[in-house]
Image 1 (tube, rainbow, N blue to C red):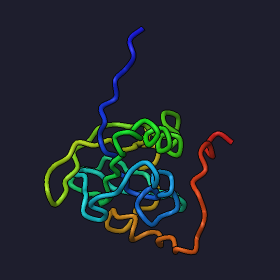
Image 2 (spheres, one colour):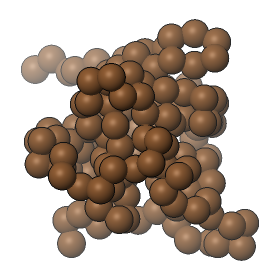
Image 3 (cartoon, helix red, strand yellow):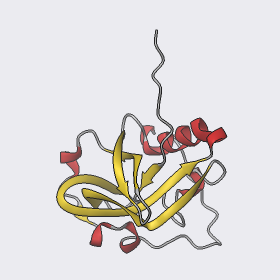
Amino acid sequence: MRQQVTPELPVFVFGTLRPGYGNDRTWHDVAYAVHDGEATIADHRLVTNGGFPYCLPAEGETTTGCLIVPHTADYQDAMTYMDGLEGYPRHYNRQQIDVETPIATVRAWYYIPDDWAYYENLRPVTGNDWANARGRRSEEDYGFARSGWWAE
């Protein structure tokens, strides 16, 4: 049986995994963030169910986010943590996409629902930027990401 090789790409995050939001602690020890608020993907928009966003295809729209870059030695752990939080492959699927940054276009992973049309009627996020929808976590907030919530 052949093992599938996963390219070691950064991850474009657009919601609660961005720095300063509720689930950023998922990657703190195994990765670092770059271009927060400056990384974008074309032809996508954000919608929300009130608790977290979904990034959906939408021609002509641009979604803002951040690149999470796993440390080389911790790559598999970083992906396991983020995949677990995102419910991959049951809730979200992980796909590759081109991300525009102030420096260059970067190929990255991002999370998108398989049945994204199901989520199209959710509330739009202003400016397709989660920073407009939710407040950043304060330094006093010691909450943590909990893996497996979707299966409970």
